[in-house]
Image (cartoon, rainbow, N blue to C red; front, side, top):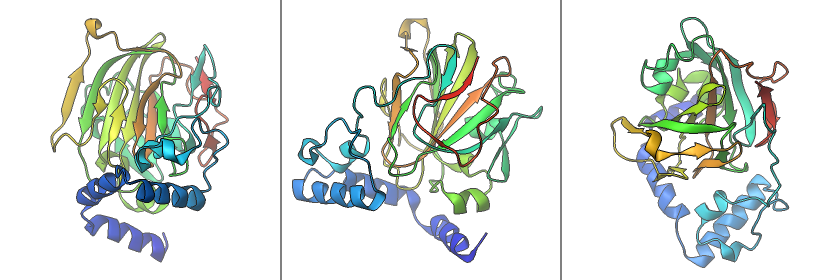
Length: 282
């Protein structure tokens, strides 16, 4: 780890991350046309955002910066992998992938942490014993809506508050269990081929994580919150259905049990991926 990474990590550890995140959130929701258009224009230029696939091109159509950041794409811009496949839930870069060992330890950028630490409970240790995980990092320029990787019914959602570290190279190589320390929303599904889970990890300057079925989830306080969805809820999703969106760049971790064929063997870390592309087959 170089000096720059050390300094970046130190700054993140001493900064009041939650207040900064909420302040950034307020700015992102500013509806002053000059301010929000200025922010959007600077963002497009700085991150080289492709506008060719954006559903609404006119900046005036977006009430605030956040609306642009979570912009929709043109219909057909992200075709799904199809039945029998596990589709990528997000645009981004594969940050890590691998098997869950017998003692359920996950590895991301050289750090190992337990599944229980990530999910906030030991309830699913046996469910995902010998299963697999795949981590996708969303950079600021990426499309920031998260989609269901396969057909499933949502059974439980959990919110876990945490220290909001930016998810990048310096923090993932220097802060142990960074994903387990970050604010996150965990979605547990029942699929046709068994259970699967998605972990939406918040990062520094994330104003909130939003779902399509419960609205804005974070922040809701400093305690773990659970939502159980019984049969009457009927929260069923087809592959490709939107499940949530980030208000700023972050991470999605998909977790599979051992009874699926799992993620494709040719996938590798640092590989770019787009929503809907196949991650593997059943």
